[in-house]
Image (tube, rainbow, N blue to C red; front, side, top):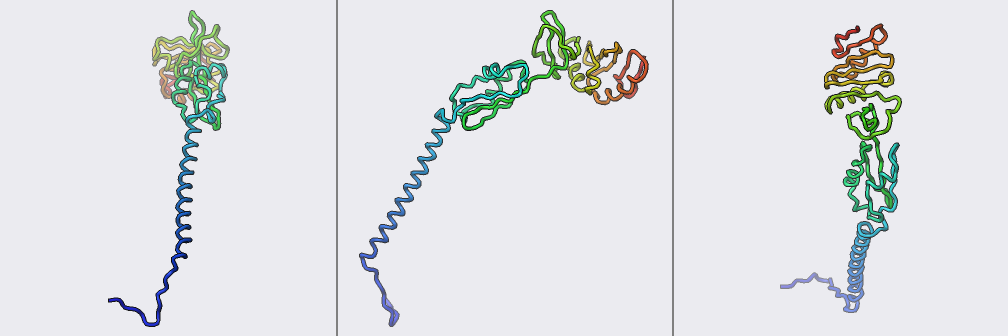
Length: 243
């Protein structure tokens, strides 16, 4: 049973009035479709631009931090194909190739859009030199033999070590001592990793021992060197001796 409210009439919209509303709905639907389609096309175009074209490619390779190496040597080791999209570059692989250069201690590879690859190189720093038949071998703090030159450069102590372990221990000591002490060390001998001796410019000798407690030993030695003597033993820094 249908009930009606007395005095109220039900109004019906004329058929002709419904058509504009339908048209507006259809237009909104089409606008949304074209907006979505346009967005997809824009994203697709951007992906193609970034990953598959040389527009944002490696057109410039900048090298910083070098001293003895040349920029061309680093670029050659990096082997970056010109125009390769920056987004697809494997920076870890590039860094690994550059680290194959003996003088490179570390390297940071980064992208700089729109078209530049930046290679920040840190070269190894020598702390000693080992003189051999083929020349003077440069050694860094880790004992790495990374370069050979004709003659030992001034200012670097000459190292005579027996084996890799003794070499690493000796270079660790040289890297850890304070600059004021390092500048008067002219030679280092290391028969074993626990028998390291420093030869000073005034011909005095320091029995250093092993590579432990470098800071403590250096502090004790600083006080000892103000006294007379030719041999200073700080292998046991709590019980130093002078002879």
